[in-house]
Image (tube, rainbow, N blue to C red; front, side, top):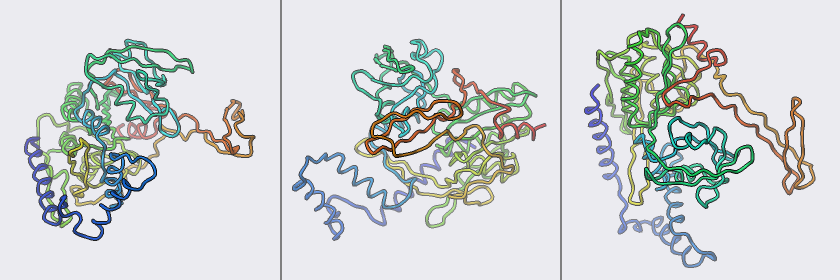
Length: 438
């Protein structure tokens, strides 16, 4: 597979689709009011501005209209990203940005707030003593304990060399650190060698323009270490760039189609073909998947399964078998439009179906946390309930209702980017893969 050729094909498909849509219908400022519905849309916007009791946020109003239009398609994979979210998205795609060298998860059960999930060595946060579990309280003077995670990420990132003051809380006690942003590179590939000289490569996302060279380097490293049994872990990989998925599959295939695209007129075209290369890995191969393996992860696992190149182990995959065209918009936002469905080498359409592993094993890495709800307590009172000999404290709301959700078990991650940490005993899917390779 030649990356340049693939890029040309992808671009051609996008242009063809755009032309086809333009021929069907195109809205302009002059003709949007040419139908009763179009006239109604314009009048509603004007009437809101004219009569609504409270001030109207014009940006919010129009973006709501955009999201409403897209929402009418009832398609979760066709969506609009606002400028702020798209800015973060583009930085992630480029694979580097100005930041402090941490990964984040939500701090609160409702998905808000920010908590440090990992701190990477030799980066500003690590040098300042930031630790896993530290909770964001303020960034500068802005309180962020209930902010959206995207908002926190946007505030943390900035120009390389610029300074940022962050108030964290550790075990409930606040502390302040001053940090100077540095260039942070996203490493999406992790590797290690398991007992018996079994190679292990985990690919966390395909949504990174640097995935291809990172993955090729990992495969080359395995070959250099004389690995002839390899595990490729695609669990929790939600996909990303289709050409990256094709390139990854091509590292293990010598010939034949990898994936094909089919448009709404049922025209089908092979998107990527495998070519024999000296850098290919030709040893035994097992691919790990779970219910969160989607899109490009399913392209790879589907191609390797169809060609019997690898044994697929784990859970039924997510089932995202469509490709989107991303379009940058005048406001700096982005719309991603589903334009094609993709097919495996044997012509399987897996959208909303997923890929069934050759060996089905439940993912045991994450356990359901303790959670409960109740009522009948005095309003605003604090209750302590003993569960398995441990106290659990909850606070009732004004109606006497209360709920609790325990913290999800956090998988161990290395503080060194690119270094994989695995559990060969507690991870049932990985354990089964190792048994199959004996």
